Amino acid sequence: MSAPYRVLLTDRAWPSLDLEREILASGNAEVIESPDDSEATLISLAADVDAIATCWAQVTGRVIEAAPKCKIIARLGIGLDNIDIPTATRLKIPVTNVPDYCIPEVADHTCGLILALNRKITFFDREAKQGRYKLSAAGPLRRLAGQTLGLIGFGRIARAVRERALGFGLEVIAHSPSGRDYGCGCEMVSLEALLKRSDIVSLHAPHTDASHHLLNREMLSRIKPGALVINTSRGGLIDHQALWESLKTDHLAGVALDVFDPEPPDLSDPMFADHRVVVTPHAAFTSEESLVELRTRVCQQILTTLQGGQPENLVNSENLEELTNDNVRSEAES
Image (tube, rainbow, N blue to C red; front, side, top):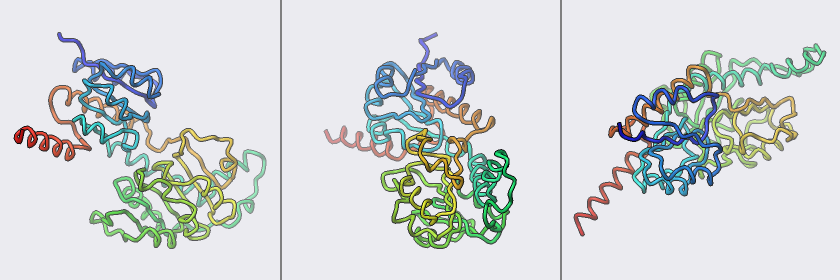
């Protein structure tokens, strides 16, 4: 048997690699796990690997250029902001993700955070456990049904949140750059209209240069007074200092965050001690079922590519095709 393929795993969010080792071994591939996710360490390990699998580590252009044998970069997740896709494309390396593995989990988590804030569940829990059993301590509570939920971004997860939210009696509006409602009949509005109308604003957008600090001081000032903000997408979408200022002035009534920038956050920040802030440790994506699905499908993507096939969810396929066609034309003209 020929020497096994080598698959570099940059980082992971689960305790064991038994599943990865079992699946990859079936295709004559072995796992090389990085001891840390620093660029220097990844570069030092990249020279002799046939594939890179990454969870949250930054797979920079320098890391990719240090891996001349690499045939695929597979994201163990949905978002792609930690991979230098232009460099991978230039080097004709396919990049994949698994865009639909945790849709129920994130949608459920988002709705759980909406309920926790609207019903002040975490506040009551903390108060009761400290010996204070007082209903009036939380202030007025509002009926959820009839309120307006505004979804920033309208991909798979946002649409799943909408389905659940309608069951609670919420009115749902959404904003996305494309304005597409995907045939579901959701009212699509401008970002400014969404911020003005929404009692609850939930973020479901990718983090890009264009969307960095999408909710900055100016945008937060346009949010309906007394609104709630939920983020289960990417921490960089919100300017957290501006968010804290908006809470301190009581412009916002509550915030629930599952993602941060940087991550993990500095939990000594006074914002995290505020009873109106609910925090979960980037947990929305995870369940026993979602992690098995994610890990299995990524390993299958890698094996398919190493064996000469085309993996599912090839995110740079069009750019790779254009680059290949350009190369063919250049060779023909020379």
